[in-house]
Image 1 (cartoon, one colour):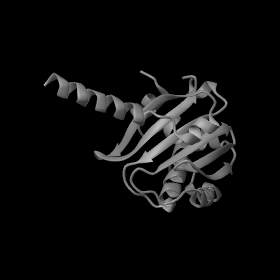
Image 2 (cartoon, helix red, strand yellow; image 1 turned 180 degrees about the vertical axis):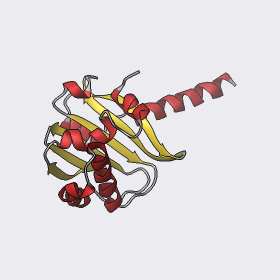
Image 3 (cartoon, helix red, strand yellow; image 1 turned 135 degrees about the vertical axis):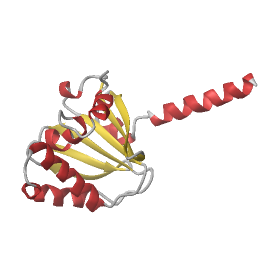
Length: 174
């Protein structure tokens, strides 16, 4: 019986380590990237995606020049829905009409793809106004937009997110 528990513990440890493996795009784009935090995002107990924040040497996202946010989907979504949802959240956070961000929505719609279970979209923020997006490790696009870091990544990492507990877990805060 002990042998069985030992084997199961090894499988569990390997599965946990695999879930924390740096995606290849993070390896390439964020020097000395380490997992800062991770959170499962759900809606009414239905899992939507697993989010992971990668920063250099476990430093806070507020202290780094570049970082990566990876979302591994637990269900399918259309690219149009991902872009529309992102812009809706930005508009909500800023208290502005969604129409103010139509150009950003069009850019994101062209950048994103329809996702299915286990697809991963990673956004790498390299400056306050730009980010590079990857789909399953392949470069999808680069986006330049005023205050893109604060606006887009603020959906998950800002002070007015829909789920402050997820934000705290991603940021590695208690």
